[in-house]
Length: 203
Image (cartoon, rainbow, N blue to C red; front, side, top):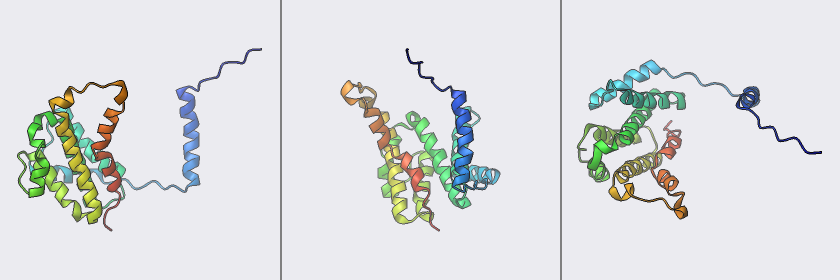
C-alpha cells in the first residue's frame, strides 16, 4: 500500500497555529507589553530638529516614507528609552534612510565624509552636516565605548554608500565562486548592529 503524500500546511493553518501558540508563550514568560511612545510629541521633536538643521520632509512620497521610518523605529523599537534618546535614534534613522536612498545625489560628497568628520570640518551639504552632528552628539546619550561602536558602524555605512557609486563596484560580475559577495558587502555596511548598540544608553 502506498503512503499518502505529506500534507503541506497552508499559510492559513500556520497563521492559526501561531495565533494560538504566541499568546501562550507570552503568558509563560510573563510578558508585559511596553507603553506606547508619545508619537505626536516625537514627531514634532523630530520635525523641529530637522527644521533647525535645514532638513525638511518634502511633499513627495519617498521623503515622507523616510521620515515615518525614522519615527517608527524610535517609537516602536525603543518605547522604554528616554524621550531625548528616542529623538536621537529617530533622527539618526531618518538621515540614514535619506543617505541610503539618495546616495547618487550626494555623490562624491560621501567620499570624504569621514575625513571631514575627523577633522571637524563642515560637510558640504545639509544632510551630511546634520548626520555628522548627530554622530557627534552620541556620547551625550551613550557610554564612550558604546558611542564609538555606533559611530564606527555609521561611518562604515556612509563608506558603503560611497563604494556603491563607484564604476568598479557597478560593473562587478557575480561568479559562482562568489555568490555570497552581496551578503558580505551588506554585512560590512555597519547599520544593523547599530540598532543593537542603541539598546545600551546611559542610565
